[in-house]
Image 1 (cartoon, rainbow, N blue to C red):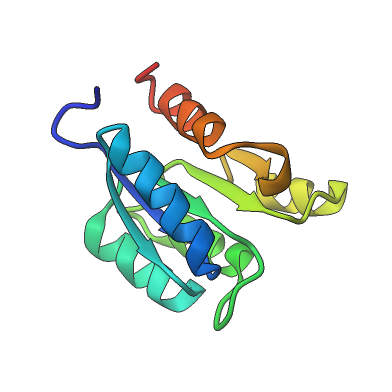
Image 2 (cartoon, one colour):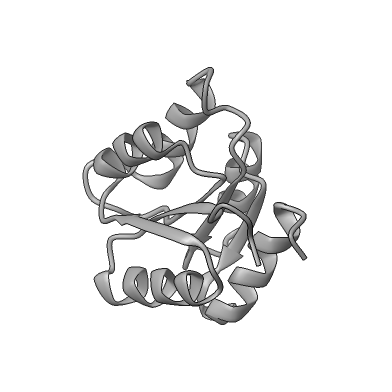
Amino acid sequence: MPTNKTKVVIVEDEKMLADMYATKFAMEGFDAQKANDGASGFELVKTVKPDIVLLDIIMPKIDGFGVLKMIKDEATLKDVPIILLTNLGQEEDIKKGRQLGATDYFVKANHTPAEVVQKVKQVLKLA
């Protein structure tokens, strides 16, 4: 169990998916907060200063790549691990995400919420 509630921010514009991930993380003892577009996602990350961010790529206002770059450009946030969680599975998207500083890249269709939680635990060395 994460101590002091490990904070995860989920930036996902599809409400059903965001709720599903948030519920799964909450069940695992995390403090899960969510935003439904890139602009509010970045603001939430700045406010919460989470331990990790799950970031969709295709979103309104600012896409995930833009948010990733903004987070990595922010001195107080640049070390926060970010897992891109998207349906874009193209090699160039994965490469772009990694170049911008993403810790990992998950194609939503290929992973269950339990696997995503497990990956987050591994990245944060909780597993």
